[in-house]
Amino acid sequence: MKKVLVVGGGGREHSICWKLAQSPKIDKLFCAPGNAGIADVAECVNISAEDIDGICRFAKEENIDLAVIGPEVPLAMGIVDALAEVGVRAFGPNASCARLEASKSFTKAFLARHNIPTAAYSEYTDKASLEKAIGIYGYPMVIKADGLAAGKGVVLAQNAEEAQAAIDDMMGAKVFGTAGDRVVVEECLTGIEASMLCFVDEHTIVPMESAQDYKRIFDDDKGPNTGGMGSYSPSLVFTPEIEKQIRERILDPTLAGFQKDGLDFKGVLFIGLMISKDGPKVIEFNNRFGDPETQSVLMRLETDLYDIMDAVVENKLSSIDFKWSEKRAVTIVLASEGYPGSYPKGREITGLDSLKNEPDYVIFHAGTKFDGDKVVTSGGRVLGASAIGDTHDEARAKAYKLAKMISFEGAHYRNDIGLLHPTE
Image 1: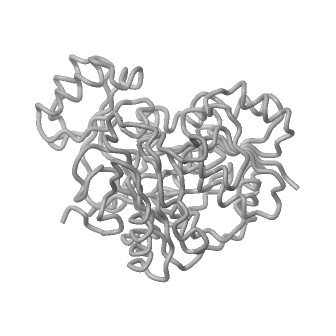
Image 2 (image 1 turned 45 degrees about the vertical axis):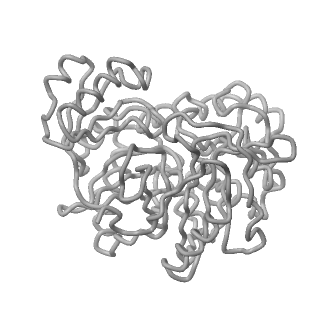
């Protein structure tokens, strides 16, 4: 029997713990730091996900068989390398591979070098030079902080004034800290966004079932970008032809590029895609499960997740027989008042036992904690109301039914999650 440690404390980590807890091979499941929902399926350990020394010390002392790294920051900090030094196997890319998310310019150069379809781009380290490039690809002007910015370092400026404001924020006021020391400007791709999560080892890349998420805070894709306000799986835009194009133009060249560049990637590669009139193009790479796509995708996974992760670490991914449910899944994110800006914390949540014993419904906790015997808000994205159904419309109706049964002061969510064209 195995002892597993999941690192992180958000909705992604709750869904990973929820799925790992179903494995008959796991005897003890820990999560550091975890949250109020994760506490139902794992033992929460009060260690920050970014306390690399503390995580390594705990993993060594507890004889952890596998550490699963959820968030991008500890991956970029080299947690996988640090765990390897103390003899603990970890699911996730090493620091060298983690640059694929930690640096937009690193990824754009990788894509260009290996002829993988993506938007045209330029990069800047000087504010004056960037200001001269305003409008270089027309509008909307896509302006990205190069480094990690919690999913919020991307601005779609509709005109020169908005572009100047974004530049002032990123390179002047440093609202994203050192992440804005370098800025990437891209042409704006048009089409429908979709997400593909892939399990990857040094020899194999296996796409999971497709998903779509919704980044803008308000209905009809309005308002600022967030970490994600909802998701569904499978994506309604994926056809067999598009999946074939993704495999031939993106997945296979990416794996070949990893091998050619000496990037021994092991873990999950999240590929943000734009399904354009010219076919699929890469918007971004992330080094880990997407949030909230993971909630919807893992609800449909029937293969033992521990077996998959173990195979990835051992470079035996090709031996796994993947099984996915034919059911559809939808996740609605309930967010705090003010998110993605500043938001209050500590507001009591009610309705968490709603439909608790119904197998088609799960509430994934993203930003919660205990306050005595109460569960209160502790993050911007608080909960994910998730459901599965035989059809997309049934899953969507169930997810909204669950969302309406949960309450906390200032709670809000989008009403158009699962609609294919929210802007039309």
